[in-house]
Length: 467
Image (tube, one colour):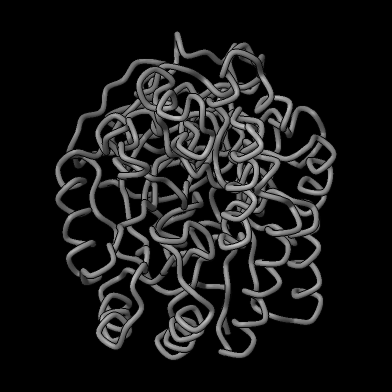
């Protein structure tokens, strides 16, 4: 829709500023900002006016780690691109970067084409893709160059899941060397999967089959060891490194050490590691299965170090790793054997609210909230300032956020296609009221007014934190 929209009277919060300003939107983009009540702002004439008095006006969230429709463990993630992006919009996220998967024996192109087919015409908000590289060979390495040129500029590798996604150190080094040349960014799932498989086998042999043992075998030390090894391999290759879903204080320490040495090493954590713990994994009657994800939830004492890492910028991004599996019929595949529980949690709808709660609780500032949830992921993955901020020329991806509204998180009221909430009963302060994606109303005063197919594929430039 062409036309003009004005958002009046709100507190505009970006990663760098807080200002009481009106926002003028024209043809899907931010045209101007002006201090509320000034002659400039008052002179604006628009087809539509949104009153944001007493509310925050923030950039739409950028969730750089989601898995819609991901095949895993004999089943598939329960959110489609249609349901998952709609739920993201309800939670104030207006861009996701999902993971296309290369299967062993197939090309990167085949994997990317398959994910384009899943997403095309089905998304409520804009989306991009990372590429999971499962089979490093000479052809794969050449394809990486081509993908960077067309806007898929990040590649995920796994030190975990032998026999599925796993890459050995030699394969990782080759991919890192290639990314050092082509400008791509390697994203690493850092857990020592070979050692973990030994511990899984031993635990099951002892009859330790409950969900809580998932957390006990995937030891924090094996996350730290793999993080350290990934950093050293990246250093040898002269490549940047982004470590996904950091959950353990020992892994944060490895990242902090590398950054203190001046290395281009970045870290992401997720809300589940900030708000949940092994206490959830230990819930009785197989309820703990709801919380099985990898890296796993850690004992509560790790949370303080993760918050500290977010404040000191040793961790730069909070993404969700949204990968939902229903409790009934999917998580239940692992009854009697925790190793068969599909790994993943729902959360794409909860991230912005949980991080606002962290502002309320004093863990982070308002601007840091926007930085870790909007601006930094956009910069990290080559989408800034089109995404992640409110500034002239930026896409009009804007959320009107009520900082005083109270809500109780629940499967009864969420919009994700999954039969439980990881945060069931959690009371939070702050709630999304209205969401615009490229100037179009997707959520209008707590009513869904978007549609599948509005969201478009967004090619990305390379990481904007690299010299």
